[in-house]
Length: 101
Ligand SMILES: [Zn+2]
Ligand SMILES: [Zn+2]
Image 1 (cartoon, rainbow, N blue to C red):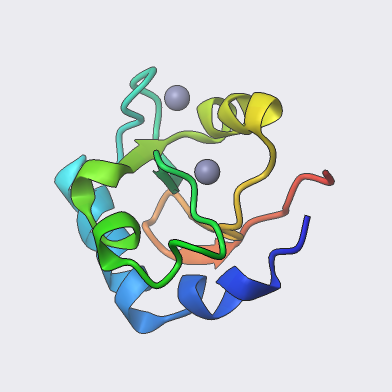
Image 2: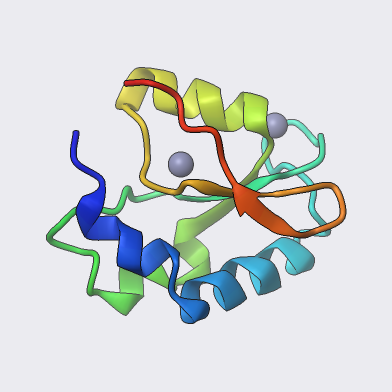
Protein backbone atom coordinates (compact mmCIF):
# COMPACT_ATOMS: atom_id res chain seq x y z
CA UNK A 1 0.00 0.00 0.00
CA UNK A 2 1.57 3.25 -1.11
CA UNK A 3 1.50 6.12 1.28
CA UNK A 4 3.51 8.54 -0.78
CA UNK A 5 0.51 10.53 -1.94
CA UNK A 6 -0.49 11.39 1.61
CA UNK A 7 2.88 12.42 2.87
CA UNK A 8 2.63 16.04 1.83
CA UNK A 9 -0.82 16.25 3.39
CA UNK A 10 0.15 14.79 6.74
CA UNK A 11 3.19 16.98 6.94
CA UNK A 12 1.38 20.14 5.98
CA UNK A 13 1.08 22.84 8.56
CA UNK A 14 -2.64 22.98 8.04
CA UNK A 15 -3.10 19.34 9.01
CA UNK A 16 -0.78 19.65 11.97
CA UNK A 17 -2.73 22.66 13.17
CA UNK A 18 -6.02 20.88 12.57
CA UNK A 19 -5.10 17.77 14.47
CA UNK A 20 -3.59 19.75 17.33
CA UNK A 21 -6.76 21.83 17.63
CA UNK A 22 -8.93 18.74 17.40
CA UNK A 23 -6.92 16.89 20.02
CA UNK A 24 -7.23 19.85 22.31
CA UNK A 25 -11.00 19.94 21.80
CA UNK A 26 -11.13 16.29 22.90
CA UNK A 27 -8.78 16.93 25.82
CA UNK A 28 -6.45 14.26 24.41
CA UNK A 29 -8.90 11.56 25.38
CA UNK A 30 -9.56 8.55 23.19
CA UNK A 31 -13.11 8.72 21.92
CA UNK A 32 -13.49 4.94 22.13
CA UNK A 33 -12.00 3.89 25.43
CA UNK A 34 -11.12 7.00 27.43
CA UNK A 35 -7.36 6.41 27.44
CA UNK A 36 -4.93 9.09 26.40
CA UNK A 37 -5.42 9.80 22.71
CA UNK A 38 -2.35 9.93 20.53
CA UNK A 39 -3.58 9.94 16.97
CA UNK A 40 -6.17 11.87 15.04
CA UNK A 41 -7.75 9.29 12.80
CA UNK A 42 -9.88 9.94 9.72
CA UNK A 43 -13.16 8.10 10.08
CA UNK A 44 -13.53 8.09 6.32
CA UNK A 45 -10.12 6.92 5.31
CA UNK A 46 -8.04 9.19 3.19
CA UNK A 47 -7.31 7.90 -0.29
CA UNK A 48 -5.78 9.35 -3.45
CA UNK A 49 -9.23 10.51 -4.59
CA UNK A 50 -10.26 12.46 -1.52
CA UNK A 51 -6.92 13.72 -0.28
CA UNK A 52 -7.59 17.14 -1.79
CA UNK A 53 -11.13 17.35 -0.47
CA UNK A 54 -11.10 19.53 2.66
CA UNK A 55 -14.59 18.26 3.54
CA UNK A 56 -12.95 14.91 4.18
CA UNK A 57 -9.49 15.80 5.34
CA UNK A 58 -10.26 18.80 7.54
CA UNK A 59 -13.86 18.19 8.61
CA UNK A 60 -13.94 17.68 12.36
CA UNK A 61 -16.90 15.36 11.89
CA UNK A 62 -14.57 13.05 10.04
CA UNK A 63 -11.91 13.09 12.74
CA UNK A 64 -11.57 10.82 15.72
CA UNK A 65 -9.09 11.10 18.58
CA UNK A 66 -7.76 7.63 19.31
CA UNK A 67 -5.23 6.01 21.59
CA UNK A 68 -2.61 3.72 20.10
CA UNK A 69 -4.49 0.56 21.03
CA UNK A 70 -7.79 1.64 19.49
CA UNK A 71 -6.07 3.01 16.43
CA UNK A 72 -4.16 -0.21 15.92
CA UNK A 73 -7.33 -2.21 16.36
CA UNK A 74 -9.17 -0.04 13.86
CA UNK A 75 -6.50 -0.57 11.27
CA UNK A 76 -6.02 -4.23 11.89
CA UNK A 77 -9.20 -4.92 10.03
CA UNK A 78 -9.00 -2.12 7.50
CA UNK A 79 -5.36 -1.64 6.68
CA UNK A 80 -2.90 0.95 7.83
CA UNK A 81 -3.83 4.57 7.53
CA UNK A 82 -1.31 6.99 6.24
CA UNK A 83 -0.88 9.10 9.30
CA UNK A 84 2.66 8.56 10.47
CA UNK A 85 2.73 11.10 13.25
CA UNK A 86 1.37 10.82 16.76
CA UNK A 87 1.21 12.91 19.89
CA UNK A 88 3.43 12.39 22.90
CA UNK A 89 1.90 12.75 26.31
CA UNK A 90 3.11 16.34 26.27
CA UNK A 91 1.16 17.06 23.14
CA UNK A 92 4.14 17.14 20.82
CA UNK A 93 3.91 15.55 17.42
CA UNK A 94 6.43 12.84 16.73
CA UNK A 95 6.89 10.27 14.02
CA UNK A 96 4.68 7.26 14.57
CA UNK A 97 6.40 3.91 14.22
CA UNK A 98 4.23 2.60 11.40
CA UNK A 99 2.91 -0.90 11.61
CA UNK A 100 4.27 -3.08 8.89
CA UNK A 101 1.43 -3.87 6.53
ZN1 LIG B 1 -8.71 3.98 22.92
ZN1 LIG C 1 -6.09 5.91 11.30
